[in-house]
Amino acid sequence: MRHLIIGIEELVHLDDGTNGAIVGENMKNRENLISKGNGILIEDNIITKIAPEEDLIEEFLPNFKKFDFDNNYIVKVIRNDNIKITHTGGNSVIPGLVDSHTHLIWSGDRSNELSMRMKGMSYKEISNSGGGIKYTVDQTRNSTAEFLFSQGKSRMKEALRNGTTAMEAKSGYGLSVESELLLTSVMNDLSIEKGLPSIDITWMGAHDFPEKKDKNDYIDEIINEQLPEIIEQGFARSCDVFCEPGWFSIEDTESIIDAAKVFGLSTRLHIDEFTDGSGAELAAEKSVETADHALFTSLEGRELLRKSNVNQGFLPTAPFTMGLDRWPPIEYCIENEMPWTIASDFNPNCRVLSLPSVASICVQRIGIDPLSVLCATTRNAANTVIHNTEIKHGMIKEGYLANMNVVNGDKWEGWCLQLGTSPFCATIIEGETVKHI
Ligand code: NIG
Ligand code: FE
Image (cartoon, rainbow, N blue to C red; front, side):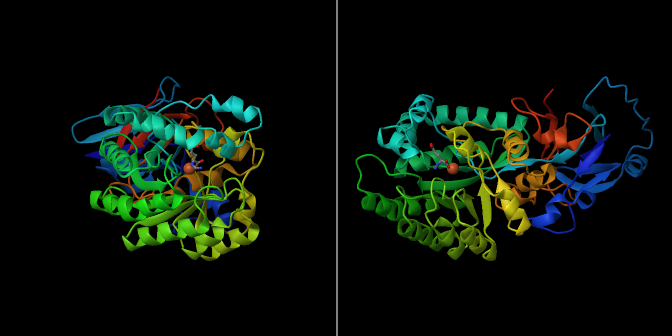
């Protein structure tokens, strides 16, 4: 089925003729990354043509009468026998957002930890007193697959309403063979649901140590029991480790990711979230796909990541929700042409599923240019997140998956300036228009 997208004011396609991550000043180049006057032809779920709107109308809708923009509709979807039209009502269009770091599946409520934090307890102290990841593990293990699935589904709907068309999702609240396999299997069930963001599954058995288990015994279990079963199950593409002093040491992390690589898993890491634990040095040495948090990483560590072409996955809502007044040095990374992404880190301690809200912090607090943040949240993020269809995504480009968002306004910058409610009036996901208002 053909589907024409017309009535677009500004099209932020992000296609400057290069592929993969975009870095440095190129991330800010409006001339190369934004166009006006173009329409988009979609066939099935693929963008097949981007051309001046008049040309597309002449070729595919010869009897089409131009709409009056009387401000009385926002997005209009018209169907006839052989073509569908989405008229965006003079609004701007940006690519579908890609959330490259989420802990999607868990149950339980940790809102009580706020008062502990306000009394000055650290994340580690809260964890040692029975809160944190361990508490969520207990709650999650006591939940059925059906409940976890339905919670996951409503979270994915919320993410979609906020423009996310693909996400990475980690296990890590099971911490046993049986429970980790259940989480990856729930994620796999969710990934085949139609009309929801695609999921790229990561196994994170090394998220914490389960209660009443010796640390070395657990690392042994991860490598010799969980990993082979995860491979046998075949749902996870990657392995992640919480590499942080007090959790998995550099040596622990190294042995886990080396073992995962032998089985062909891709690797990602949580590094330097609370302190500089030399995680960046390890991430660079092992050439992981993405080194996330990277909040306390030294400039030397960042330089090593750049040399190894390792992405820095910034998660500014993590310090935000922890009440920490520290932000990653994003402008420094731009000046030094380092690849970086922005993601939500959605987890029980950081309950944000809206990438526009995360972006708003980057723009309105850290002072980063909205176009750079958009590049980080779309094409750079897509470089570390494989779409289920295995079709390229993250840009509005011929041959790419038809995933895009219609901003509720004619200025594209509105995508990252609105907190609390979605800035989008519609999302086109795999070629289908979903109206949000
Ligand atoms: O990325 N730090 C490790 N994992 C999560 C937090 C998980 C939790 O607190 O439940 C993170 O911030
Ligand atoms: Fe995380």
